[in-house]
Length: 156
Image 1 (cartoon, one colour):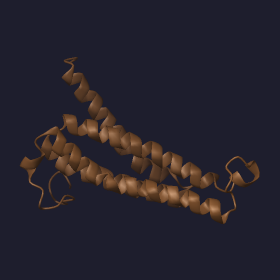
Image 2 (cartoon, rainbow, N blue to C red; image 1 turned 90 degrees about the vertical axis):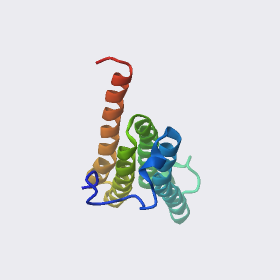
Image 3 (tube, rainbow, N blue to C red; image 1 turned 45 degrees about the vertical axis):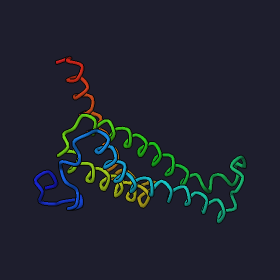
């Protein structure tokens, strides 16, 4: 639905011609990644909040550290997925046509943002759905980037 303009996730003010160069496509991607960076900041503050409320201020004390382990695990997983996604998206926009950048970058970031929320809400027992929502776009981007790299290197 996104690729056929049934759902438009980008502002009407964006003109397709403005995304012809890598710099403009990278800028467009980075703007949508703000959702993911905001989520990362939320997770950092959540760990801090847990440390204060659970009296686990010293990370070297094992007896209190177990109280913040869950929030630290969520932060670590979010950080890994978001860093990976950021680099994959920048690589994607270096290979992709400007029309695909316009339509897919907002979708990727919204899906991943929702995935991070689902991961957080379902942790630890029901985290799989949220993790899948985040990991699947990364795997698709990686596959596309690897395919385009092979084409770029004239391997096929």
